[in-house]
Structures are given as structure tokens and as C-alpha cells.
Length: 164
Length: 375
Image (cartoon, rainbow over all chains, first blue to last red; front, side, top):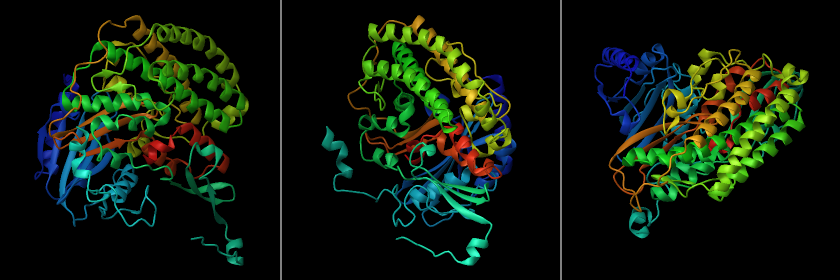
């Protein structure tokens, strides 16, 4: 159950997000099954405007990640609070594979490494990133391991059938 | 390819030079490379270079079913494997909507907290060893050995546990484990005074860690620092309290914090947390409910389409699993939030201006696990 403080913060957050990114779709999600309170879907840009709002509200950038949906990428930003009013916001943005999103590292330095990791594994290039290079994989690697077509064998699609 | 340069006069006259700390260095707690730019003995810039123990745990998840991934989380943070195992089980249970029996939740809390103590022993005593005190390390190892024996008794492994199952734990605890844990709590309580005596009043230890590597609250927020490292900076944030999971709301425990934000504060927070973990274990043993330890779940779980994020307090901070499911038995994407990853990055902010010898202290006080950073 949400406490009064959480509800207040959620209402505040919704209104300031609606003001900053009017094009985004905000929806409340079920914390018990999802693990986050608010979900914000963006179509094109606006990640930096969201990050600025979150910093003003004293949220921390928990993680930045992505998922490869064959024809597009989904970038996910998780923001969470440090204080008693625990609220988590998940920002999703679907981007075509050739689009270069903007980096939020000027607002949250934590993103410098998190975005480098996303670049390292998915090949998503962030614009205005101060130091975009490989972080975990070798510097001279010519592959992006978490793309769905990497490391695919003839068994990949049959794992389910083989096991049962 | 080796890129060897001959030293010319210009390089010799240059004030600033680079030094490699690691990848094989006793104070880097694993295979970690710190590229330091020094001016004399003062650090101007530090660049941690990671990835030496990357095993592709996130990619592995996409090639196996949820059950087959059970042994993996414990191999990410091998020092608090039980907690990661617990976290992964919680994430899949949340995705599938599986209810866990209360006894299983209690057992998970007991084992997680035991594991946290074992991990903090490494965090604190290894740090002391980095500063030149070898005896505490051996004492801590001795106490930690007891925990490993206890956990081996019920899970069969000493470090990389896969004791948790979806909907509970693998097997019930034995009377031997119950009595052994009670005995261990008693023993450890009697030894706190020894640790206090051995380290806390040591002049060298205090001089090398007080006012060294101060992380401010603002930096902690900007860099996403969590865990004891954050609590050493005076932020009272613990996932177990602020976003309670499992049966943690049923136990009374404090969140130790220190205001200073230096290495000593982080060390003190960890030592204080040992006592709190003991309190939790004791309460859990006192009120251990009867009943089954495993819910009835299908042999293979098939979560519905969707995603979920689960966060939990590992020994190093707020860790998390973000799972995307496409409705099959194979995960579509698993992302692990590694607390050490964010905690390590703050080094680039706090280290410049310190002496080279202080880097060893700062790095030790943050207590990172390298395989967790690299995954």
C-alpha cells in the first residue's frame, strides 16, 4: 500500500513530468507486480528533460539499460528516491536502430558509465557523451554481444523444445 | 600488440606521469586495473579499467530457461551469493505471481543475513589488511569460516550458492544448522570487543582512513552510490527498510549511519551492520514459523509477457534484477543492477588530490567485488 507521502510525491511528479514532456504517456503501474510506481513512455526525445526533473526532485539514476527488439531498441531508465517516500519511475523510449539518443551524463554523472555499458553491449551511440568507448568488452571488439543476432546457433530458437 | 615507447627527454621532464595499479595487484581485490595519472605522489586523474572477469552473465540468460539460470546470480557477486540468489528468485516470483511460504521467507532472511556478515568480514578485514594490519584479516577469516560451514550444511556449497528455488528454498534447515547458528551468534557477539580493541583504537589505521576519500551526499546522489558506502555519508537509506521485501518488515533493526563520509565512516558502518544482521537472524530464529519451505510451482515456470524490476540490499548496496519476458520459458532480457558498478565510478570524483597510498585505502573502503562489476 502507498503511504500518504508516496501518493503526494507521485502526484507532484506526474504534474511536473506532464509539464516537461507533454508528448510522453505517463501511466501508473502496479508496484506489487511490476516493481515500479510510474511508467513514462517516450516516442522520440525528452530523456534529458526527464532527467533534469528527476534531479530537481532528488531522485537518483538507478540504472540505464536497453533491450533489442529486432527492428528497434528499447532504452530503459530507472530513477528511484533515497528517502522514506520510495518511488520508482521507469522511462522507456523506443528508438529505431539507426537513431542516436542524447546522453543524460551532463545531468547525472552516473550515466557516463551506464551509457558506456549500453553502447558496449548494444552499439547504441549516445550523442554528447564525454567518453563513449568500450567498457567491459575488449577495446578492439567488433561485436555487440547483447544484440539478438549475436551468438545465435541453430539451437537458440529451440531451447524450449530441447529441454522438455 | 605491445606498444613500447622509448623515453625521450620531453617525457622525463614532464611532471605528470601515468602509473598502472593492477590488473594484478593485491589491493585491487580481484582483476581490476586502475590507470592513475600522478603528479609526484598526488593523483591527478584516475580511470578504473574493468572487464577482465566478464563472463557474459546477461547474455547467458537469453540462452537458457529461468531454472537453468539459478546458479548464475551467485557467481556475479561471489561474496554475497545467497543474497543475489534470493533476489533473482524474488524477481521471477514477482513476474509469475508465485506466493512463497512464510517459513521459506524466514530461512531466506536467515541465510541472506549470514551471508551479509560473511561478506562484511571480507569488506572490513580486507580493508584493514590493505592498510597493513594482517591480524584482523585472519581473525575475520576465522569467524567467516563458521558461516561458510553453516551455509554448506544446508546448501552444499561454500561460496556460490543456488539454495533458493522459485517459490521457496531447496530444503528445510536442520537442527544442526539451527543450533550452530545460535552458537555462532553467541560467539560473534563475544568477539566484537576484540575487534574493537584490535582495530578501532589503532593510530595507524585511524590516521590512514580518517578524512580520506570523503564522499558528499550530493556526489552520492549524482553517482548513484548505495549501500554501506552511502550510509557512511550520512544518508539513511537501506532497501530492507525503505522498500521492504521478503519478511524484513517483521524484524526490528537499525540502519547504522555516519556523517563523515570518509573511509573510517564506511568501515564503522559495516562493523555496526554486523550487529544488526545478528539481531535479524536471532529474531528470525526465535519466530521461525512451521510449515512447508516450497510452494507448489510447475516444474518449469512460464511468466506472462511483461517486465518487472526487483531491488534488494546486497552487502554492497541496492542491487536489482530487471527482467523482460516475452511469454516463453526463456528470459528475453535480464539486466542486473550491480551496486559495485556505481560505487566504483565515484572513485573518479573523489580520488583526485589524494596521495597514491590513499587510493588503496579508498578503494578498499568502498568494498567492490570485481566479478559483479564485470558480470
